Length: 214
Image 1 (cartoon, rainbow, N blue to C red):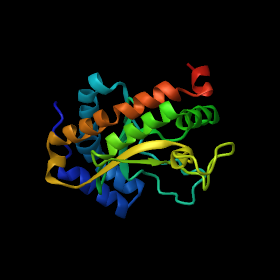
Image 2: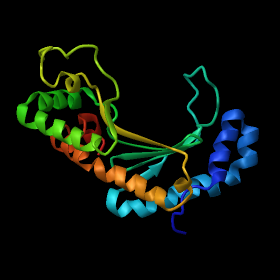
Image 3: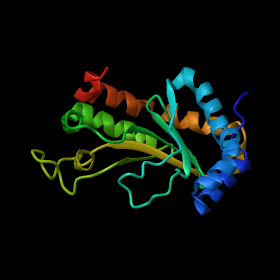
Image 4: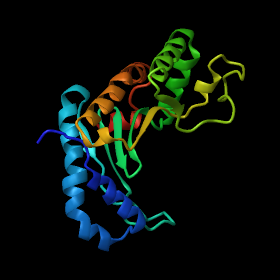
């Protein structure tokens, strides 16, 4: 089957789950999840794979071991593909890209690259090129002031304060979500974010811990 978007039943499923996040609801509606929610996501990932890389759908179960909220199920379906992230919920579609959280060695390399005029100005241009596409680029987590060893008046101090850098786009529920046009929205986002991913790959790279496990 080719990707034809997510039908209204997929959104109805998550609206119902938000109202009744229970095993009883999940069991009664599991077939809808598999056919109307998970099925289209798998089709989308398969079609985007040749251009954007390997993918993985996250499990629908929440890890409640250390959470006060004991709701057993996530109220969205999410997947990673290459350096990108795709999410569907009752609120609509969302996509992200970049480095959500950097390990200490990655953060060191990121800050050095941002502080350098050549690579830092290149990142500014990359960010501007993405933002003109109406995609937000932001820090996942930010220091309140410049990191130790960097001047408070550095021209790229805001970028230096980031602990991770991501591009993010949300689309509210629109008729196109139930059609193959949803693929074009996601592909357009992922394509627009490729320069950010390339900059991060060239200047930050994988963490030492990641490399050790390869």
